Length: 323
Ligand code: BDR
Ligand code: CA
Image (cartoon, rainbow, N blue to C red; front, side, top):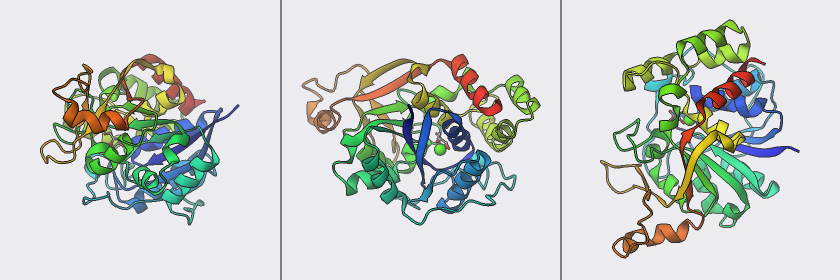
């Protein structure tokens, strides 16, 4: 029995590894990949998704969507992933072309045709927000929406306050977090420390001589340097593959709890901050005026993943890249 996924991505180097995971997992059927501007501009992100699908011998349809956030100028992360998002090694699709349909239409049609499906978002939430705005009944047909985004109760990676995907389009994130969908939030803290691929693991992947393993390492060459510059930590950190791992196997999330989560859209200092009601005080009389709309909009609360089974995730990832 296949599970159906729809993946929305701003295809940088860690997105590409996450796409490989989904496309290589036997019981996952990826119905569509939709692309959004984020790490890099839309055309480059689309080209990278096509290249990655080609590498996996997959003919999954790929749709280009929003070229900029809902209300703000696009801010990219080419400084992290390289100018082309894949470490600047010249990866280009040879055979595949993007579909004509807009990604937002594809999201709406794919959800309608596959009620109960899982959406996995790996980039800014612009495409998904536009789809939810266009079709008010859409959220109810989504089984799970696994979001790589946010920095629950910890530092951000683009500003001290925020994680990149939420920071780029906070208004879109707010729409999605207020949609009533069943949301699982996989923050960027999960890819750090022991979760980053260490040198021994990187050498092992290269020694396997498998094209997908080699691509996963080489396309993340600039990202590995940027991660060290940013955090002082060594290795390849893979935020999107942590989210994809949990989307495929929810048991990889060891410690998850449900809370109201709000997105900061007003303050410039805290733009894109994911405020988690960790102590569950939103209902208190002193908070209800401000948190009331969030409480109403999140009947299921947001499931926040705090820790992940890193050895099991790595084992799974390496098997998909090398077997
Ligand atoms: C997120 O930002 C992007 O640079 C990565 O692809 C990931 O989706 C991590 O903050
Ligand atoms: Ca991404």
